Length: 298
Image (cartoon, rainbow, N blue to C red):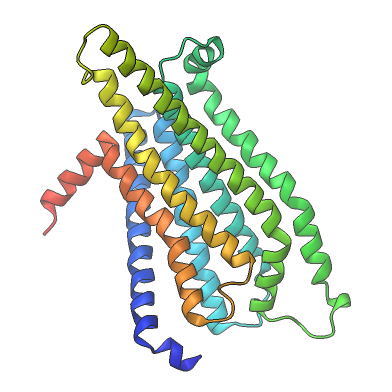
């Protein structure tokens, strides 16, 4: 193990993890700061900014929580820190819900369907969004209660002769919590796929109608569709990579070799890091502030 930790692969891997963590903290911290400052100035927050604020805040807390877990693993290996693992899973899942509802929001605002349900939702999405977001998070919390009770029952002092180490607790928590997490993760991923497919169908129908009328397909509506679809497609790829890392963790693929474990850490960290950059670059207000900040940076 010691040789692996000082191997060139380990050094490169930890460097990549460190860079991704810095990017994640910087990117999500930038999004949170800009949206909150604009809210304080205007005394109102649009639904899109509300989702971005919640998403960036949850990812910042998730990152800080992960750092606390690593700190306890290094300096307090026998400490009781099960709640840190549960809070990490909850915050991480909350961020996935925010990503899904952000995709739904973009989809509803952009698509051009004559469906009565979609038209009704387009008119009311601003008011319904906070309620739907709260309901989805509450459903996940309630669904997680059996796993929490099972974990605490298996780790009660009366059921053990030796106090488990933090790594053993993490493994027990992961085993008891994984079915719920992977279920809701797949649900969120399916929602993102559905939103992207609806946008692609809407774009295809719009372009087809333009061609029938001998109109240029490079109109404003087409450009808006493309601006939304491109980041959603990249998000789907990042999301798929994250799901793959969860499945590999559950099968124990990362537990037998330190190198594999580092690969898993990289796979988990890529999503919040790269996605934050995508959100900044595709959001006009965030991009404008970022460019101004970049011009004044030394």
